[in-house]
Length: 165
Picture 1 (spheres, one colour):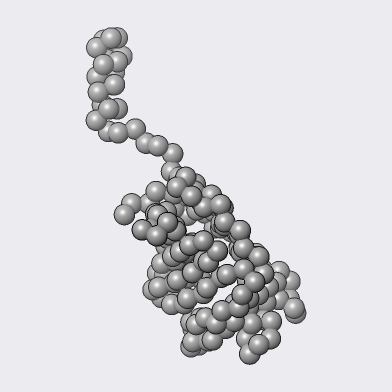
Picture 2 (tube, rainbow, N blue to C red):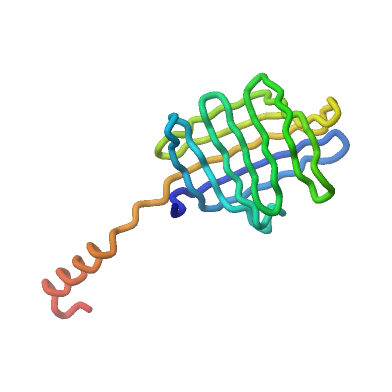
């Protein structure tokens, strides 16, 4: 499927012993509705995120978001407000089992796009390792004129004013 949306992502990671790490990305991707009424947003990671060669897919279904990464990095994380989920996270040094504790989650995602915000903590060995805030805005690509119609309009315009190219 062709890219049909523009995705803006802002991420902020807070660690106890260092200054906040912030990331911002704008990319094109795909938004589609699934057969159960949820939505999937997918996009290709880039060199800027350090995950080049990876496809990220977020499945939003009611009060649950599942993030899947496949490619050069593979991982799965589940977000559900007020719940803790164990997830596998692949690092360059091997796989790591982490806890994902979602503090707050909000989604207005629909056919025309919308927003997703997830406030969560990462736990390693039951200790909070970091606090993360993920914000994503999804907008439909602006409508593009159909090629046949554009050519016809140019031809009609030329006939009405022969001096114009």
